[in-house]
Figure 1 (tube, rainbow, N blue to C red):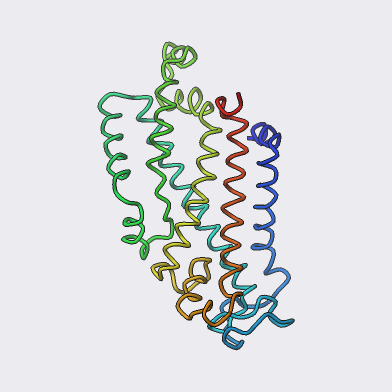
Figure 2: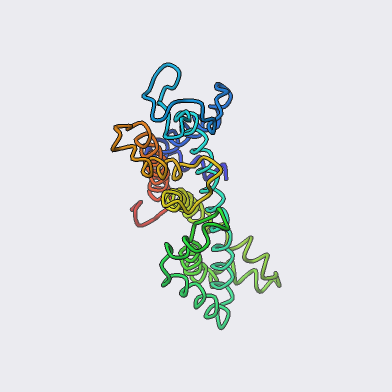
Amino acid sequence: MLHMMKIALESARFKFGFCVFAGVLLFAFAFPLFSDIDPMDMTGMMFESPSKEHYLGTDNFGRDVLAELAAGTRSSIMIGALAGLIATCIGLCIGLFAGYVGGWVDNLLSSVTNVFVVIPSFVILVLISVSISSRDFMTTWTARAVRSQTTSLRNRDHVNMSKISGHGLVRIILRDILPYVASYVVTAFILQVASGIISEASISMLGLGPQNTATLGLMMHWSVQFSGLGNGAWWSFLPVVLMVSLITFSLNLMNTGLDQIFNPQIRS
């Protein structure tokens, strides 16, 4: 992993995206160390303009927008990271197993993933948004892509040597195939984190997400519900939109940088 990170830092795009995302993380997770403002505390006036007491003003409930933005960024990043981790792990396991074993197992798992591909992800997101926090449905995409790479690797010389040596299925997959798709899995994870954050923002903006915590999507939802734009309270929605844009921009820039390094077609 350290070797991969050293190679990734050769890309200027990855370095810039990483620095931007690190700055977002620093703001979100270090803010409580420098401020004791409760992001859910409704002590201010409705849509109070930015001042020394509230640097980004207050929202429709009188809550400090800056504190709420930091808390919402933390929540959204954690949801996106959890969604990306779960989706990557599931997709990776399905793709590796289906691609290596082949036969009816491959056909069965491919059929299952194809079913989820044709179902609009937004419909699924709405149906389960109340019950779970992880809303990323790029699992099928990861499974299909990893499967195709594994299929091309399963007959390589080093894999055949492991088979002849009597090594088991799990050892061959973990030792002889997984390292060759590791760089791709990292890029897939980054994209899935970004997708999870956007999905959370979309669902929460419609009011279908959690109501008892601060998220970026929920902040936009309340701003729309109480006509923040119509009241001229730009601070109730513009910082949130910029934060979502900054997070997704930095993650996609990191992914593009990794593609430049690890994708032979782009590199050539």
